[in-house]
Amino acid sequence: MNESQALQRAAWAGAASIVLLVAAVALCYLVGVDDASMSDTDILKRLNDDGRQAAAGIGVPVLAAGVALLLWFATGLRRVLDRLSGGDPLAHAIVPAAALLGGLMITGVSLDVGSAFAAWSDEFTPDPNTTRALGMAGQVLALTGLIGGGVIVAVTTRIAQQARALPRWAVWVSYAVVVLCLSGFWSGGMASIAFALWLIGAVVGVLRASREALTT
Image 1 (cartoon, rainbow, N blue to C red):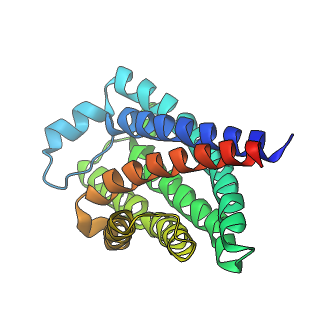
Image 2 (cartoon, rainbow, N blue to C red):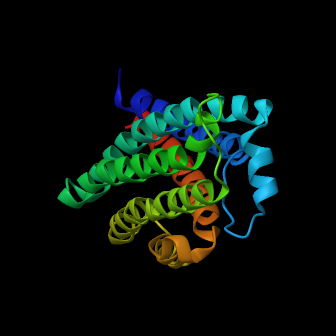
């Protein structure tokens, strides 16, 4: 496989990861508790709904697949940054940062949906307060994982800025995304949206790099 093909496949893996991650979060949200003020009745209704439980059961492996594809994309992005920087060691932070993001996302979502899975057992007695606490803990963990996303954005932006590969407005927008990602839980979910939009731009950038590699 030549360089162009490797980058192209990594870019498409990144695009697929965005779709899968969004789908997984949407499926798991059906049983999760992301609001501490949710009533006990609503929480118990979510836990005892077979359809919602089945959707969350699908969502967790979809999330894992999305994280795996994100790591594939991260390796491609690192190769692009290596070429831009001439081998700057800073580029090697990309893959561990993606692993941090993915690992905390999986852990957070698992905490959030754990009570719903346990509710399949007749021996389980649902407790809204426990479910509420686990849901909020999962949300905090998952949003803290955006620190990894912030590292990905910061490293990519810094190297692209030094190589003069980004216009000034894109640099400032990217650094704003970094600030949102580092704020994690306190961003109120805005960081997740901002990072997803930035990731789409990064996928486009890797696709362009694959075309340039084809002509060189």
